[in-house]
Length: 138
Image 1: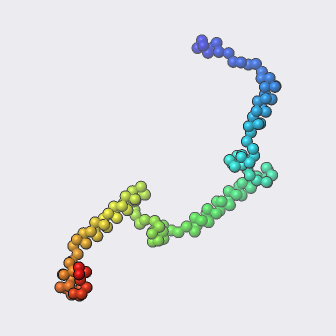
Image 2 (image 1 turned 90 degrees about the vertical axis):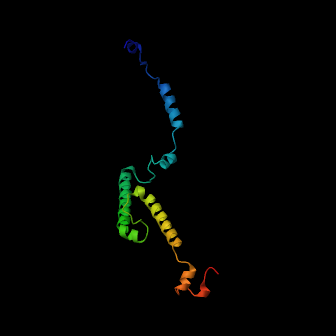
Image 3 (image 1 turned 135 degrees about the vertical axis):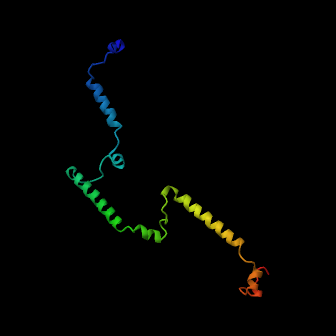
């Protein structure tokens, strides 16, 4: 506490010359209006300042109307599922990829099992399903 009492704040007034130099230095490093417009700090408009907020409100309303119109034309979920744009799944979105991968592996396993159990060409010829000249092994 004793140290805080000893610290003195410099209260000498800033000289007008020093303030002028500081202002000059800041004005020299000031960004140009084009840069400020590119960074959306200044509005890029030719409208009078009194009309700028109204113009901005109109632009925002136009964008809102455009979004509403787009959402009204948006297809229903069922239609997107029918067109195979959305997956027909009740699983959470975080695990739908894993579900799809599992279904793919299950189909591959099922196909492999069916290929192992399919009848030999000789059996198909014997049952009259294939002709003798249609034997794929010859």
